[in-house]
Length: 140
Image (cartoon, rainbow, N blue to C red; front, side, top):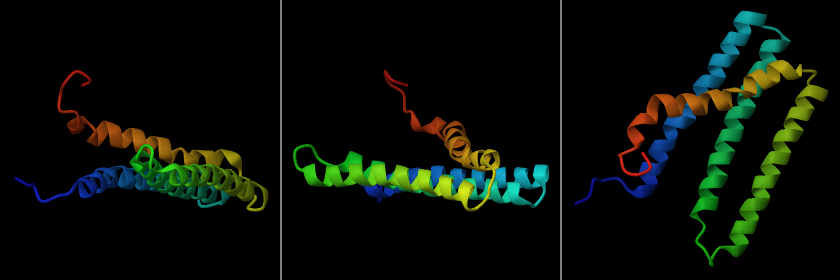
């Protein structure tokens, strides 16, 4: 008997909650920055950090999903390509932060505050919606 959803659809639905929570956390920290610092460069830096957090989360989720989906013994080239993309993602993230601080003249503290939306969003999603995921057993 089928429930009407495939495994891929179930995985996609499970990550939507995390996606939305990270986006919500980015919006929340941007609003907090606007309330604390006003609508100046600090709020812009926080928003830029939140945008980087969301982009990093989506790239990380996509890459890790592909890396975990590679079959043993059959995905040598694909695994190497995905690992190189993973390293490139980190290099792009570091480069984006450097460019925002250097040429965007943004302060590192608001940028880091905005980027903390990634951690806040993932922990928030796990605490709020992750409770129903464990069905019991030895590792629950």
